[in-house]
Amino acid sequence: MNFRDPERPRVSRRVSSVTLPLPPRGKRIAYLSTYLPRECGLSTFTRDLSSAVDTLGVFSHPTIIAVHDPDIYSGPYAHEVRFLLLQHDRNSYAQAATFVNQSDVALVNVQHEFGIFGTDSPRGTWDGTYVLDFLRALRKPAVVTLHTVLEHPNPRQAAAFRELGKLSARLVVMAGNVSEILERVYRIPAEKIFFIHHGAPDVPFHGSDYFKRVFSLSGREVLMTFGLLSPNKGVEYVLDALPEVVAKHPEVIYLIVGATHPVVRKEAGEVYRKMLRRRVREHKLNEHVRFVNQYLTLNQLILFLRATNIYLAPQLDLSQYVSGTLAYAAAFGKAIIATGSRYAQYLLADDRGLLVPARDARALAVALEALLGNPQRKRDVEEAIYIYSRAMTWPSVASQYADLFRKVIAEHNGLFNSAGAVKPVPRRVQKSEEVGVA
Image (cartoon, rainbow, N blue to C red):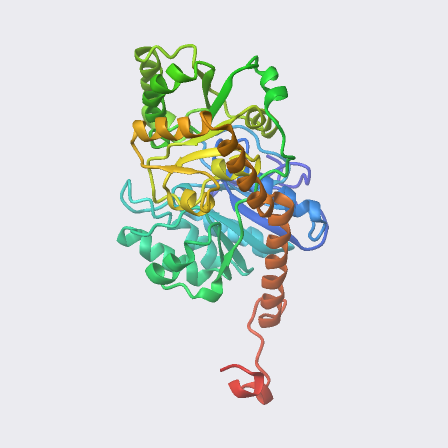
C-alpha cells in the first residue's frame, strides 16, 4: 500500500492497525468503542451519541477509534472511523494512544464494557485490561462511559476497574443508583462520577395502530423484545407464559426482534434460537410468535417500537445496571414489563412500569393480564414513562455530554501546557489556603 497517498488508509505493518488522515479542522472529540456495522449495543450507542454531540456544533466532526475483531466483523467502516484498534492485539492500544496524542483530538470518550477489550487473563475472566495501556499512554483527557458496573467483581475485574478510575478524568454512569457502588466497591471519588441518562430518540407520544399496518399486524396486541439475542434475554419464560395469556387475549402476538449476538453465534451457533423455536411449537404458539432475525437499522427499530403495545424485558442477569433496549422503549412511551435488574428498578420506579421476578413465567402472565385487561392502567404507565424519559432524549443527553467534555478540556488545559507537561504552580499560590483549597 502506498503510504504517501493521503487519500488511502495508512497501515502499520507492526500492529496491523489502520489510520486515516484527519482533515485540518479544530479541536474534536474521539470516541473509543466498537462501531457500526459491527453488531454490538455499544456500536449503536456510540454512533448515536457522537452524531448527537456533532449536531450541537460545539466541536469539529467526531473521530471514531473502532475496537475491531476480524473474527466477528471483517467488513469496511464508515468514513468517521479513523483508526482500527485490534481488540486482541496489545500493541494496538499504545498505537491508538499515539495516534490521538499526535492529532487535534482534545478529549477521548471511552465506551467501557469489559468484554470489548483484550486481556492476558485466563479465558472467562473478562477484565479487559488492555484498555489500561491505552489510557496510560494517552496525553489527552479521557471521559469513560460505563456500560457495566459490577457490584461483585472478581479480583482481576476489581483491580482493572480501580485503575480505570485513576486514569480517567470523569466516569459517566447511566443510572443514579450505581454511584455508590463505584465509591464503595472501587473506592472511586464521588467528584469523578457524573450521571447522564442513556440516550434515546426523541419521538412524539403516538398510538400504534398506523404502524401495525406496516407489519400486517392490524388488530393485534403487539408484545415485543428486541436486541441481540442471547440466553441471558430470558425469552423462553415469555413463551412459557403465553399459552395462558393468549387463551384470554387471542389477539396477542409476540415479536422477538434481533439477530443472535455475534459472540454467541461464534461460540454456540444458533442453539438458543433453535430452542426458542422448539418451545413455540411445543406450546402451539405459531400464530402468536414471530421471529425477526436481523440487526435492525435505527429506522427499522423505530417502526417496530411504534407498532408495539407492551415491551418485555425478561432479563436473567439482575446485576445489569443499564439497558439500551429499556431506554429506547421508555423514550417511545411503551408500557414495560421487566425483571428487576438494577436498571429496571431505577427506570420503572414510581409506577412507570411493572417489575417481575426473573425466571418466573407465571409472574409474567399475571403482569401481562394486569395491562391487557386494564387499558386505563396501561395508559397511565405509558404516560408516566414517556414524561420521565424526556430527559433521556439524545438532544438532552448530548448537551450534557458536551458540557462535561468542555469542562474536562478546560481543566486539562489549565493543568498542562501545549507540550503535555505539567505547568509549574506560581510560588505565590502554592499554599492551599491562598487558592481556597481546604
